[in-house]
Length: 248
Image 1 (tube, rainbow, N blue to C red):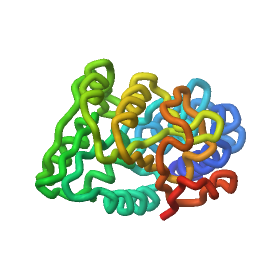
Image 2: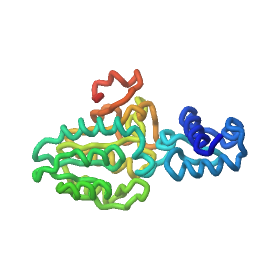
Image 3: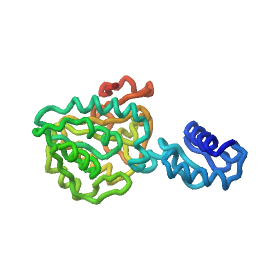
Image 4: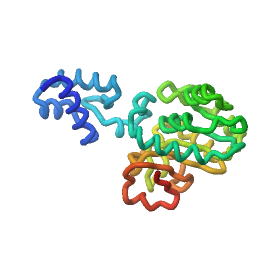
């Protein structure tokens, strides 16, 4: 088997299984464990899967355990994210004061939102703020500590600033959405920023592709009915009839 074919086979098997060990991959592909370890390093470096101790997990599963970097997330469910953000951008009314959360789906949103002079945006993402500024939007950035993985500002300075504001609407991402634990994030500091910002918005929208349903990260920041959920893709049946679900 050629090296490229082997790499593609590894990605396919890990994606289908969710995670696989080095030993299982080596046996399935009839190569040595050292070859598999080198392949996993290569695939991790180009953001096709996540290398973990003893094997690898799909990016979807890794997204629940930790915050993926923006490059790791940017290639996941691209078409669904584009459909979601086009619908979300239409919800911003003239003269609005709008919050935009950090995340890969909300990063797509900032390319679609109106750049009208009477609309102002607040975000806890330096990357989002930069893109909004480049589009000519009015934008304010929270204070706080910068997380290099997600380019998010977190901590007490961020939440203190957010607590002073009242937003007409806001848009958030989520790593997982479940009936038991609601909207979840793997990081307590990011979850707290999300929770505080949601409490300051009159209209709340969570932007999440269908892969997030039924998944649970470590920290809850909202209940399942705290926000309208805008989604696209194959939503699991147990969530498909939620009254606050909008499928695009």
